[in-house]
Image 1 (cartoon, each protein chain N blue to C red):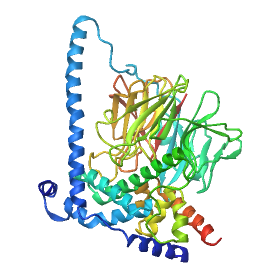
Image 2: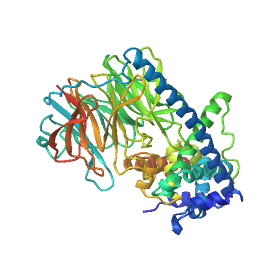
Image 3: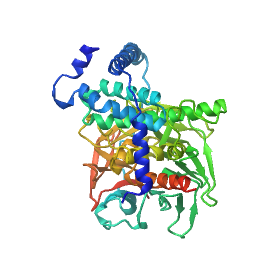
Image 4: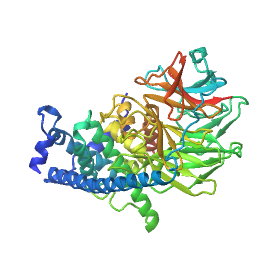
Length: 162
Length: 364
């Protein structure tokens, strides 16, 4: 493993895979945690995203943006799988979501939002991303990202002011 | 202005994020996972290479005996008539933050004859998708409205977004769109009542663009579950009897992996071939100096017929002999040309539009 890391890390400077891992891994696990509600799932998704980044590291001109997009897509896929599982098993709650945090009216409400709204809010208000960044991570237009944020906030406001 | 709710949301998210823990051997797991995946991907390559050799041998044997069938359909060798009208779309009207959509028409032989502002439908629209007859879908950030500028009629739809739409032979409209908290994918829209009937698509496939073929089949361009977390470009054809066939487009796209999740285009020409224009290349991946690709494929098998690197727009000529496209430099494309010939290698430069265009429909 060490030899492989060194191979990918050749070239020095801030653009090595180890640099990417050191600076971005924990933030991406946190992002996955916030998007899925599970630390464990967040780390699994982040590891997949970093494995994909490792395989094509030499071709990435923005490795940080690439792994963020991958983590968001990975979390979206996880939510889709959960939805299918719930339908099949006729369960009412996700298996792994929302099991490892203290109760919070606001985060409970966030967890009920459609995935794209939830992701837009997390990227905007936790990661402090611009609308362009959010659009790139979600694969949508900037205007769509704006409306996802504003509609997500409106839904949250309805819940907390109820 | 940051509201109390936004501040509270930030604080609670930061509080939850502070509890996140990572495994001490994460880097090891990442590298081992990547190496395992790399080894797995080599096995199919070996099998593919063996198959290719076998097919080559078989092709030589067939050719020596009787005449082999062509692998892919080709376009006619005659140039198209550059007459009629082209409807184009624009999504890069200069704007501060918001990109606005519009559509307009110009004579096929003179793209410079268009006004500098879109003249079809409303002056500027957000998140709009136009049909060839001028009707359009728009979103005001809430639900989608289907509007007819000729009559002023507007129908509210039970949709949060529409990515793509095209008129079906029975007057209904094939729509690719969805709801945040409901169904997403392909729907059949009754334009009078606004009623939507969702149609099945293969599991794990997320369509972004739709086109209707001469025989009533529907072609969908979209992403399947791909390599880890990035979409696999796929063409799905829904036959009139409802059966579906899927073709991965990796080979047709030369192994590049552009976005097909946001604003790709697709059009099924009178010749029976399907043209696909991807989103810009995947952001963050430096795999081509060009932005946006148009490829023409045979919908029967997904095989590449022709590629127009650096060009986009999918207006087939009414006689089916050529494809109008606009050059793409950055996000601005205003040079318009018509490509024709069996592999679309012949080109007629028809002029420059005064603003970036995406030719969509070429009307007689």
